[in-house]
Length: 263
Image (cartoon, rainbow, N blue to C red):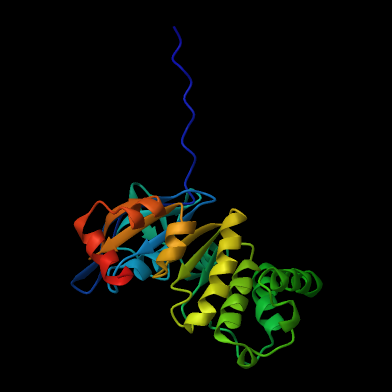
């Protein structure tokens, strides 16, 4: 009798394997194991200092790891492997890997001396060699998607914080990344502006963009995330579907954290 055929598990968009990171003598990541499936949304939640943003920055090698490995779409990030050992790649090669990984920070980081349109088209033209005509067409389409079609010629200083963050998202998307990383994208915004940014992120999720999001927005994590990972002291304490982790946490530390911010 022949053995039944097995279907290999799909390669996750991001695979963290026993990832350690230290600053000096302080271990800030302690053996992180986590898969982010392609087309899914994963939210990292937890107290300040738990390692969430550091883990995010390791995905595109803005922070070097001290042990373990990170793969994006099956490709080892930040290192090459030879004879069972990992060697850090050049900054040029790391920058090339980053072109497939979009990142949106807490601060908007727009160029103040360039218009909204110029902010968006610069990287596709300079890094990927896209023609100005095609870059502008893509930029205008993205601005329409984030609700800012009429702001192409505006200067960043003329925009609200929520509008600037939406431009930052459009700028990241202009590079046509495999995945998007968000590092507390609403934390610098006035409360009434948070919703407009989360709405754009919800739309990206609906369109199947793979997203890894560090957030304190528990409503977004509960409703949009396919999985939530609660981090504390450099470790993942609990992970699972957003509604389950936030609505019915199993670990005492998770319950204590959620109780402190939801009450």
